[in-house]
Length: 189
Image (cartoon, rainbow, N blue to C red; front, top):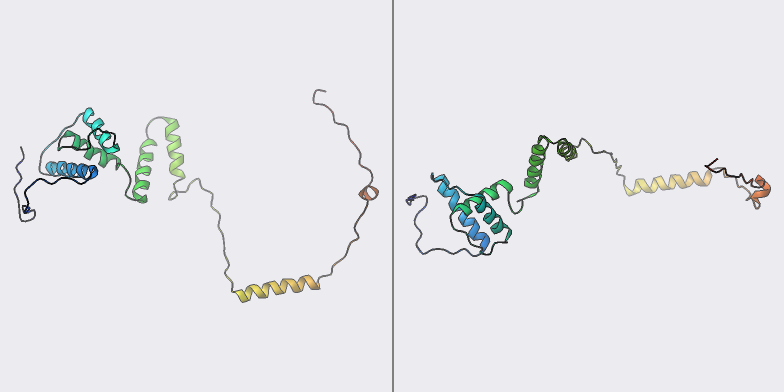
């Protein structure tokens, strides 16, 4: 049994009645924080595979009861949250780091197919960019006056160009000759 003494850092609350969590998520957070505090103070809480299954059901909302006491289940919930950052990532950077780290583990798992796919995905990582084709786009910014002058210059060149009018051909057969039909040979021959 662990005895906890109040200190100046953590004074006793005015109301000593038990607090109830507002939501099941809050109840899980309280249980996880309590387990963390107990371990920080030297307690050790062990859990079984059954406790892990119950913890997973609590986290995914599949459990019949949505409350958890400070037991092995709370310890399993704490470990699951820490290990998998369950149920979601805090931000995109956290997700990117998790995925990159998982791919690094898979890249050295011993199965060549999985290793190759993990290395391919790591190579496609935007920070690494081994397998990405890059193309540069150069944008020249000009003023509207510059664009207007450029358009006027092109129009002047077109107007002053030596244009040779051609006469349209009415009868292509007369000009080019009749079309010869070449018989196809079959592939069976």
